Length: 129
Ligand SMILES: [Zn+2]
Ligand SMILES: [Zn+2]
Image 1 (cartoon, rainbow, N blue to C red):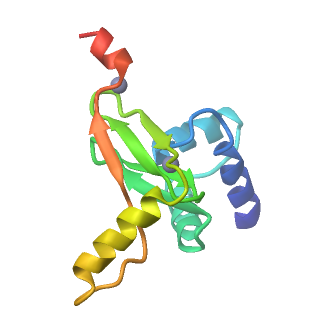
Image 2 (cartoon, rainbow, N blue to C red):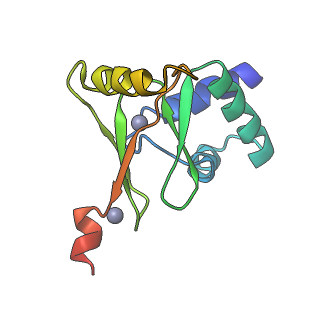
């Protein structure tokens, strides 16, 4: 049962909204008449995150947003509407930054995970000001 739910939830990530929050995912599941509690959903998301199928990041309001674990990419986050967009960087750009930072902290730590995001306002939000 849980495995089926996992599959259903992973499929939700193949939709235009690539960085849903748990609440968004929950609403989508309800639309599909999937019976699952919010608690269950959180459990599944945690386990998907642990098995490195998905990753989470915090948006400008501190809400957790999930995305499929993909190649290294960073994010643009709109501080008004919470839009989260992947920014694909040329090969090596993140690696370059990572080795630069790794060099700075080499005496006391090793980087295992990168969570890079840029915050601002999307044009939609700027237009509606
Ligand atoms: Zn916006
Ligand atoms: Zn992403």
